[in-house]
Image (cartoon, rainbow, N blue to C red; front, side, top):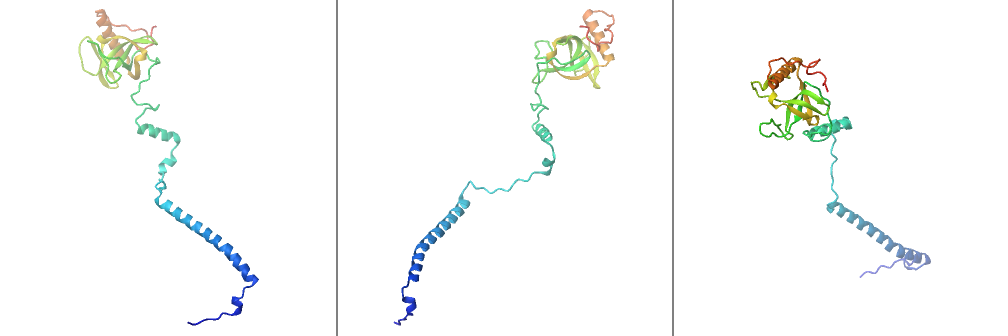
Length: 226
């Protein structure tokens, strides 16, 4: 075994060497502890990012250029159209009742006539509506109305007229008083010739007279006499 003899300067204990030994004795454990905690924190963070199910990487959804250019009002209109709603955001078949709409003689309206009983002519659909001719306006709250039909019928009970270019039948035998609150939506109105034709047939049917019907000044379409 070969023994190596170190120089005396390296084996002699001096005040300076003692100071170095004390400093290293204090700093080495502290430095090792700090480096160890930093290393452990980096490992824990890597594990959390790898296995934590709450951390989900998502790519941002690109917004179409069209949606960036339209206004808020246009977005609302698109939403209404997409959901098949009316202009007020309600289902398209919503009926608003409670008011008395403005109407006049000679006009044709969708009217909620209700279900039929016996020989009565009823309405169709969820609200039992049917086209009604405003024959005589009694007041703002009611009128004498005559139901209409698209069926081709002949006889003293019926009058054939034109409405928006289509042949329709005015059913005189179903004439009755209606509340204006039953009116749903205006369809159109008859011209003076057809109004006079309906008036003549009505007068002849219910008075059993061959005398011609003479409407008030201005025709049947004119203002109510009440």
